[in-house]
Length: 481
Image (cartoon, rainbow, N blue to C red; front, top):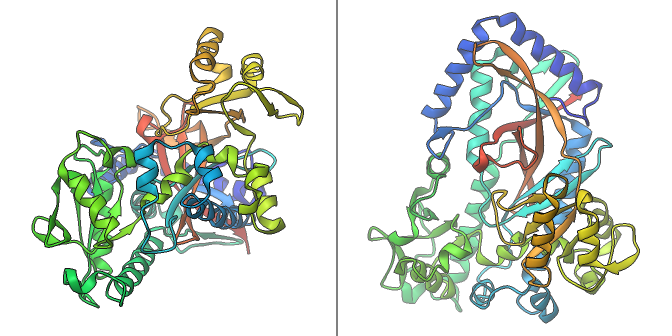
């Protein structure tokens, strides 16, 4: 709830909220259990378990939140430009070096001109107030549905968090994420329908109407996805906003009379949560092929289209500020944000490179010699898998990783940053109020090119991920009146 970047404003709110919790006494433990049951009832569940939570949102001072918002919107413009450029920029394709099948999927002729419709930009909020973006989750970012519902649960169970709320000289604000998603899905559907039923679109041949009272949205993932509860949350929100919505697995997709269909009903909009590797899995059902064909032919709108994969690849962190791609940055503002918020990152390779201190040297040799200052990551993995913090990795393991992956183009090396920690109120096994010290990162969303709210993830471990047992909590801004 409070962090090294906290100031007297966030400290004042934390003090008031902690005080309110302490006054509850044993009732605090009862409310925590009730909150957990409420979360299960409202689908705040991942892999069949209620997502770990604490008894407060994460508070960030309003001016800091505004800086995060500005950085997110500038970076989203840049990332979108890289995703678009991949289709025609041979140098970018060579540098990213995506597998052939993946590259062809990313380069499908688009029906819309905005490849990056949905992205979660995972970052550290440093002691000195700097924002450092470590990854861009542009493929299947989770947390949108969970977080809004979790915030509602906290407000319902803890009166000291009732919202909208005026805490005397403090003003709290929470940015709901789901409305941004709904607005962007509606925009994608409208622009796709206008294109597909226009003179160059396939609409008349496929029987696509120029308007639809309740467009049909289907969230698509693999059959074994642990995120189905969040899909239900999002489908409920879409239904309330005037869509028909459902979730389905890739193997439920079919082509009927040219349209992409689920259980015999034509789909208007696919909200893709399936990763590119799942769609391209050679053992996948014909449903994946049906999806690719429908997108290629413009027979369905896709929210979160395949070119977003470019932004998701961690190698882009090494390329986004590289001189050879300076033409993809526009103006001093974009160059400044990239320089200030992206930590030193390189594609792991042998040979010369610019090192963190600005000097030139052999990259692989430097990585071997400076293990404590660096992190190794696979470029295309997710969920915190195979992330190796040098200072927590045995030297033999570290050198074996460098030997195995330098020059393959499949791993990156990144400057190590101290993982922020904060103090968060929770209930111990005896039902007593305690304050835990936890590692945390911030995870702002960009949806439709705009800042769309933020979540915080917390963990006892420095590699933070909900799929690895970490917790999730909503972010609120707090300001003096």
